[in-house]
Each structure stands twice: as C-alpha cells, then as structure tokens.
Image (cartoon, rainbow, N blue to C red; front, side, top):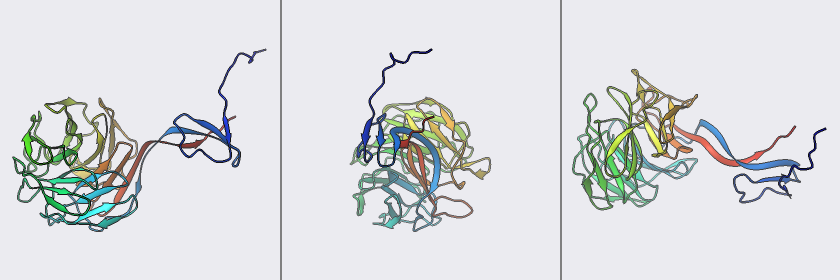
Length: 320
C-alpha cells in the first residue's frame, strides 16, 4: 500500500468572496460559491468585435492601448479626423491640422505623435495633448507609407515610399522637438508594419511585392530578425520587440486575416485570424491586448476588432 504521510502541500485559504488583488499562482476556496479557484495565466488568442469608428477609413494611424486608443488621418480622400476609443466606443476629438493618409503614429491617447503621410509626401509632424493637435518638428525626409514606434518624446520613423518601389531605408529619431537621422534599414520598405520603442523597434513585412522579412532596431542599427510564416504587406502591428503581433494585410492578391505572434526570435501563426480580412488598418496595443480598426475590406471599413492573447485571470479549478 502506498504511504502518503510524507507528502506535504500548501494550505488553501477559505474566503467568502474572491480576493480583490490576487497574485499569479494564488489558490483559494470560495465558501459562498463552493468553488476552488486560482489566479493564472490564461491563453485566449482570439479576436472579437469592438465598437465601430464614426468615420470609415483606411491608411490611418493610431496610438495608445486597447482601452485607450487614438485613431487619426487616413481615408480615400485624406482626412484630419481624430477619434478616441475607451474600450467600448469611439468619440470624435480634435482634428489634425493637416489632413493626410498613409501616415505613422506613436505614443499614447493623451500624448500622441502623427508624422509624415500624403499625398503629396510630407514631413509634417503634429503632437496631440489629449484634446488638440499642435505643430512639432519637421522630418528630414518627406514620405508616406512608413511605420513608426515609440512615444511622443522618443519616436522612431522608418521606411516609406510609393508601392512598386524598393521603398526607403531611412530612419529618423524624434526627441520631442526635432528629428535626427538614425541607422538605415537593411532593406527598403513601404506599406509595412512597425512596433516597439525608439531603441527596440521592429519593421515587419512589405507590400508590392509582399515579403516575410523582419528587421530589429537597437537604437543604432538594424539587423535581420525571424521571418514571418507568410509574406504580407499593408498590415498592422502591436507590441514590443520581444512580444509583437502582426495582423491583417494583403498577400497573394487578396486581403488576409492572418495573425502572427513574435517572441523576439521567431513568428508563430495563430490558427484563427481576424474576424474579417482587411488591409490598410490601424493597430495599437500589446501582444496580449491589441486593437485593429478601420482598413479596406470591399470598401473602406469602420469595423474594430479586439485581440485577447495571454492574460492573467481568475479561473475555477476542477478536480476529480
């Protein structure tokens, strides 16, 4: 017969209601619901519908998080419209001074940066304070179809150019007042995705032709990083250099819903993509909590989708 007297465990707290601020790995017994519960990392990896933009558009930019996002610019005819998202719905806010599409963004909902765009290609920069936009420093190279990363006072602008061309390799760094040249990308890119910070950014994919290559920036120079599983362009991205998300876009002559996750070394394709395939969408947030909005489906779209990846949450523990 097996002896269990030497096995030692951990006492489980008995409570009448779930703890207000549990720590990851904590387990307790809820005497009211008669359930054993724990606070654990749960992987969802799925998209769900969010509130629609008030103005349908593509080739727009964004800043912020899933529950505090900013969408600005874009459109078939360039627009200056700016909208704020609270996790449920979008509301109109102060308009950009210069209407444009295919621009880039960085920062947060209350401290954002909008830069470049067109047509024609511009180097205009604007700063958002949560209410209105004001002029910032002009970029050294006017461009559109670029990507951006970082914050309002420490931003990165890279790539850009018309489709069907190799695209620019130029990188510029913003200090809150002016732009200065940074290290050039190995490959020119336009209509691609970017994310991260000024000193740890990612450049992902490219349009016309679509590519799967990724490059990583360390604040000085760009180096090759892991390739996407599927070549794509005109997509969106969210997250940081070691935990990124690429979603939507255009490949093989059609819109795609594909979603891929990056761990700092390699990309993994999520089995299910976005609810609706689209290109030219905006994207903000983290690898675990991202937001995709607008874009082009069969026409310009106002649809918003919310991504939930791995998240710490209270879970009921079943035993047998």
